[in-house]
Amino acid sequence: MKKVLKVAADVLAWVLLILAFIITLTVLTSTKNEGVARLFGYTPMSVQSDSMKPTFSKGDLIIVHKIDDLYDLKENDVITFYTIVDNQRIINTHRIVKIEEKDNTRSFITRGDNNPVDDELPVEAVDIIGQWTGKSFGKVGVALSFIQTQKGFFICIIIPIAIIFLFELYKFIVALIEVKNGEISEEDEEAIKQKAIEEYLAKQKKEEEKAAAEAAAKATAEAEAAAKAKAAEEHPAEDILDTVVETAEDAE
Image 1 (cartoon, rainbow, N blue to C red):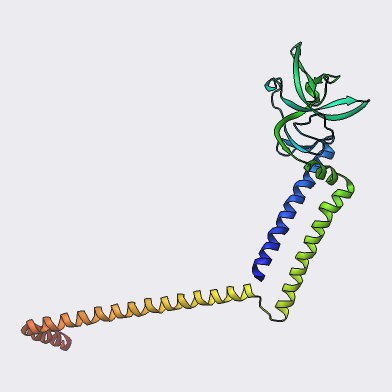
Image 2: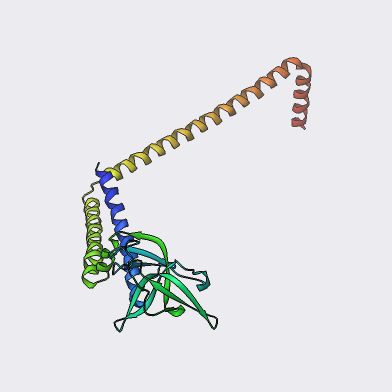
C-alpha cells in the first residue's frame, strides 16, 4: 500500500509539473503576441461575451487554429480577429456572413450568432488570428482568464511547483537519513532480495555446467581407455612387437 501511494504521488507530481509548464508557456506566449497564445499552431481563447450564444457562451474556452490560406475561408466559418470597439482594440470571435473581394484582396463581414446586425468594421486579412476548430469547453475559459492574471498565476502555478519541490526535497532528506542510519526501504529490500536470487541461480547454473563438462570429459577418457584395451586384446602380437621396437630404439 505504501508503495502504491508513493507511485501515485510521483505521478500526480509529474502531471502537475506538465500542466504548469503548458500553462506557463501559454501565458508567456500570449504576453509576447498581444494576448494571443499559440502552441503548435493552436490558440486557446477565453470567450468574453455572449455574442455567439448558443454556439458558445461567455466564460467558455474555445480552440482556434492558424489559417495557412485565407482563400480556404468561406461563409459560415467562425474566425477570431482583432477589431475596434468603442475606440479600443479587442479580440473578437464571430461568424463570416459575407466575403468581399477587391483588387485581389479579401475582407470578411462578420456577425455574432446572438447579434441582430453585422459588425461595423469588415475584417481585413492582417487582422485575422485564426479559425475556430469547433471545439469549446464550458466555463473553462474562466480558469484560463484567472491564471493569466498575476494572482492566478501565483496561486495555480507558483504554489503547486513550490509544494512539489518541497515534497521532493523531503523525500531526498528521508533517503539520506535512511542511508546514514543503515535503514533500507521496502522497495530497496525487495530489490536486494531479487538480486541475491538472481546471483544464486546464476551460480547454480554455472556449477551445473561445470559438472556436466567434467562428466563429459571423464566419459570421453573412459571411452578412449576402453577402446585401447579392446584393441590390445584383439592384436596382442602387434603390441608386443611395438614394445620390443620401442625398447630397442630406447637402447640405441
